[in-house]
Length: 86
Image 1 (cartoon, rainbow, N blue to C red):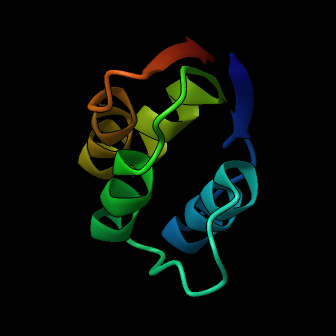
Image 2 (cartoon, rainbow, N blue to C red; image 1 turned 30 degrees about the vertical axis):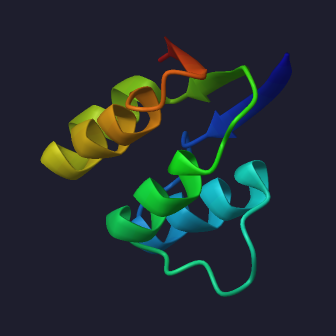
C-alpha cells in the first residue's frame, strides 16, 4: 500500500494547498492547481493508497467549504483511505 502524508498546517493560500498536493501526489508540473485538476489526478490513482492529512482542522477552519471539498475529492476514490490529524 502506498502511503502519502499531506501537511496543510502552514498553508494560508489555496495556492499553497495545491503546491503540497502536487508535491505529495507526484502530480505533473502542468497540474492545474484547482479542485477540478485535483479530481482528475485523484481519479488516476489505481493502487490502494493511505493518505494522512496533517492540519485537517486548520484546513476546515481556515479554508471552510473549499477545504471540505478538497477532502471529499480525496475520499471519492475507493482506492484511497484518508485519515485526518489536526
